[in-house]
Amino acid sequence: MTISTDVLIIGAGPSGLFAAFKAGQLELSARIVDSLPQAGGQLAELYPYKTISDVPGIPTIEAKSLVDNLLRQIEPFNISMHLGERVETLSALPDKTFELHTSSGSIVICRAIILAAGLGSFAPRKPDLAGIQLFENKGVEYAIHDIEKFRAKNLVIAGGGDSALDWSMQLATVAQRLCLVHRRSDFRGNPASAHKIKQMAAIGQLELLMNANVTRLGGAEYLEWVEITRPEGTIQVDCNYFMPLFGLSPKLGPISTWGFQIQKGNLCVNPATCQTKVPGVYAIGDLCTYEGKLKFILSGFQEAALAMHAAYSYLNGGKQAKIRYATD
Image (cartoon, rainbow, N blue to C red; front, side, top):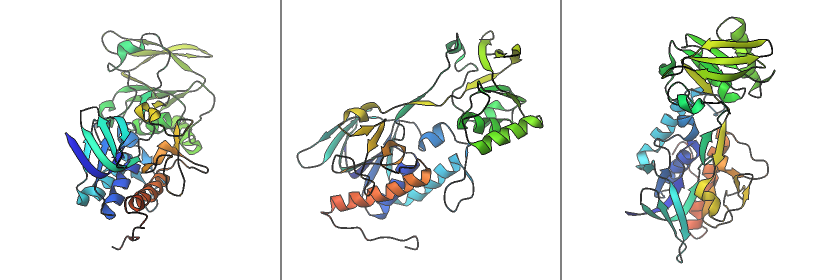
């Protein structure tokens, strides 16, 4: 199947979804391709219940609710999404269009590309723990998609970053027992979250074991217990689910072979337009880098607007789009 569109947006995370909204406002046809089976990127895949508090005008919002709002925002423009498809190849054609082939066999011809693929494809960093693969999907979980799955269960979380802290605070409200294990004496995550975790531990809402490591897993068919080693000695803790939340190992995948200037896994762009070294190809969100880059969701929204207005100008012989305000 061959599809033609003005702009192809690769990535259906917050930046990609807002780029689609801007395309609709500018009356450019657009399509979105994402390798994940649902829209939302990392917010939907890894942190659906995470509380987000740095979106202007919204004091707090759950990640999945923010994704739902962004999807509602683009509904009027009938933008097609190809989910569960990965862009495999990209070619520049003589007429200055681009031809892309996806993993499902689709061929997309477009005039501009917005790369909003975030960290690219990503895999969890797994602990070097003997036999852990035997309990994967049988009590060992690397991502949380449904908080109700853990209601009234005995949980052990390992990690000291934002993911471990955020999920410990969330899951402690539904778990029968939650134990957070961290190998250091201090956390590398948000200081406010670390303080909250210590407060919860002080009043018995969760158990906190610092300078400790999970060293063994046990059970028959499913996980039943974990062994935790501390300076004071080793203990065995009943456990239905063990969640090692040590962050992600990002991989750019095919994007890394397309000839872009890459710095530490990010695509270098002009901060005024978010254009890469390839005319007509723009990168936004966590994928792009430039001097002064801040990896905030709000930065991705700004970059989406800059990139789409630059793409409009590129596609219209240098003509600038009329600025549209929120009252239009």
